[in-house]
Length: 445
Image (cartoon, rainbow, N blue to C red):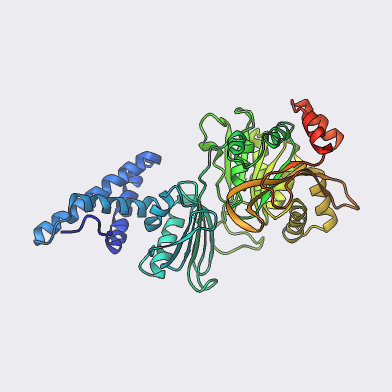
């Protein structure tokens, strides 16, 4: 008889998952309308049927029978393996875990924030099993499925719970590498971020006006600084009935999952395609970010949000901002000035643009850079805060300058007014209700 607290037999879980997956596939083929919650319930039914059959076999063979508690533990493990993340699921379910870092099946760390990394038990019995689990996870999502193999060694995808997974397959890395990034704050507002001391009320009022005045904003920061969280909060400033399109490599904004916040959302996701690349350099079935953006403009979209800009997204971001609707994006950079240089570099690398053209696009179509940090005096902290809000203004030649409106000096964990927007920008902000008196006094003082 099993100890109720004993870990389940994961090799048996793998076998049961394959059996249940086959049965579920047949159920879906028999009734293609099965989706969402109904598919999960059918899956649970198949799981219990498989477990009961196995227990019956144990009884007939005169072997130790599973306890009810162990059967429940097995059912959960099979469900997590089929619909969730298997042995990683318990870490994803832990509300205190921010990120999960896996190198091989047995080097597993959970990031509890602020540099608190804790070693965790293995998440597979071998590297081969771990790769097989990730391949199953990547391929099970129908037409959204993505390849993961030595021929396709780089995997980026969103997970059912909204988390983002990045993985590397050998031989690019000696062992399989996986990072799962969680989003603890999905339905978030600027008011909540003020309460969390991420920014001041004055900064929240300024950003609210900037969004409503249809200014294009880039949220910049290190990994884990809270860029996506702030981007969601900026989106929640919008009128609930304003049609929005989100364009991402992997869905992680999830504006469509916020009941009452946004009623007309079109979440669009890049599709990498499968098979050998053709003469045009594209794989069959590939849908690019630029194609998604062009199509989004035909869907009565009034506001375009381009998720994290890491490479080829820069072209889609420029096009979105050229629409004049007030686009929002995020970028990995450590200062407003560095954000300008990084965007220019990405444009040159991925668009074959000249530096002059890149700087012109940035200067003409991006209004503000909002800089986030999760470091104080060089040390990573649990707290995330806005260190800068800078307006992009004309500089020498084509290169724009990041003129500070709010800035936190070294050692401070909040920014204060240090400058004023350009007169025309200020007029646009005042037209949507922004009170510029306090920023004038703050900048002079």
